[in-house]
Image (tube, rainbow, N blue to C red; front, side, top):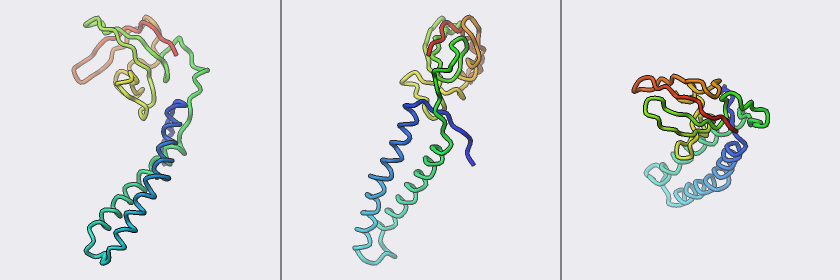
Length: 157
């Protein structure tokens, strides 16, 4: 049994949409490919049939995995989040004390992390280091290059 995963409304909807796409578009495509391969005759030497069956197996495994994620998903109610400390869904402006660089990140669940959108996982080194901190606190974050001190400048939602 898989553990509980936390999602924003947007992330949960995206996961549901992906499952729907796989079931309603991709599954029928693969079924059609299998049908076409069967129509070509001898299945023992039919590479197209084997490839389509492999694709079907991968698709069904992916659908099962995503459905399991959905079954264990919990949508986070951000109206109850305390802005005085860093938690999941907090948007945090931090300053790297070593080089003075400032950056703003939103802490999200692992499955919603996207660095291009400035969304980092609460399970990442920086995310773990920031959790529970307040404005003015220094978070000592262990990264592969060593320990980086970050000052919490602002916490919003």
